[in-house]
Length: 368
Image: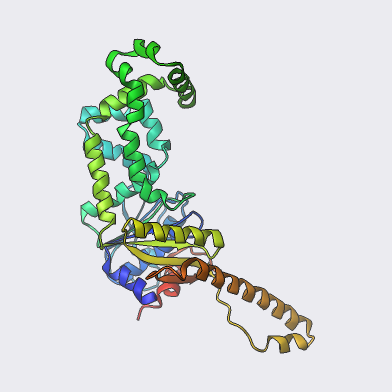
């Protein structure tokens, strides 16, 4: 199984690590990136996690929306990688702003960026973070500087959000419902508000209280400015989707050995299949493999308090190991052609390149 994962790291151009929050996607992404650089592939890892774990583990004081190369000093006295390793952390608002600047004229971009409604949706609209992660991925691909791009998707209640984000955002920006409501206003100005029905007026009054802005004016102005850009925006989203669907990409679903996490991993694997997206496999993180001991009963029979306590502790871990095996088998065993890799729960915290290499060794085996 590890050979299959090693092949993905050696051959693919894009690896998307996805899954629910709290399962170790950021750490797994970093470990895979370190291994790729060790093997000689110029690699960048992009994280969505606002915590500083990735930056610290790579010897960087901080990460931002601009790629930073990992310094040779981060490897300490260990071996130097055969290729450069880069890292960055997605800034959702900055990425959205850059996209607007790239697509609009300087004057129009300035007006959109200063629009209060745009400032609100670019930071809070559901799906924006996921979509901007995809946009940043596409941007890195277009730059052509890296052989391998590893992206750590946003933590969310549903791993499906990453695939659904382009549709959600483009549907919103197309704004058919809001355009119907705003059409008289967009044509004639604020005085037309009185022709709206009572429900529409109530909606905008409530929304204005939430956003703290003159919502009706801001929304109408935003859609007036954006309507000429929508076709370009939608086409770009479709190109990102096409890139994700090529055989140069692999989705790796990361899960914990808990029942609910594995259920979500199963659902996402099935969804990837329906969407014809290239599945690399499933990584079950922080697992416990405890082999049976035939002499356990004999140990207990000695009556030694220390040996008995040790045997009981072992038995608890063995039970947990069996429970994990059953949960993994129930959730994933019947999925055809799905590779499953397990990562042991390491005692030491992953806080530097050496620890990331230890994790990579546990997942992929040591470099020969």
